[in-house]
Length: 104
Image 1 (cartoon, one colour):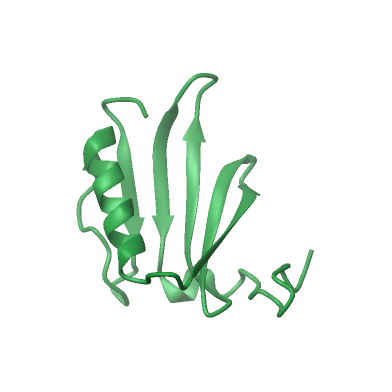
Image 2: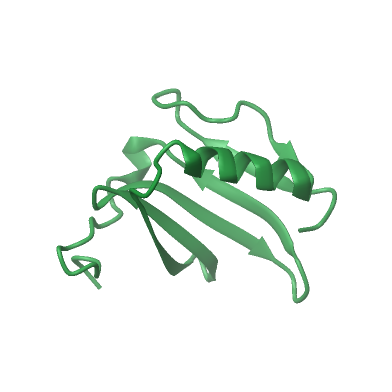
């Protein structure tokens, strides 16, 4: 991760999210690992293109809880955008019982 960039979280005032941009690879890693520890063993993650960039959708009990969109260069992650606002996650499909998304 580029040293000057970080994670920008959007909770929309509805769920807990970092209020400020978390900068630096060490702080970013600690934030993301801390969030994951809140749901031990319950998180399923799927890789997906989001706005033509790599991204991850994190599901808990087959319901989308977070979308991570990565802004990248050819050699580094420049920024991570973390969306946990339930209103913005409504358009993200839930997982079916087979683990694949319910829509293509």
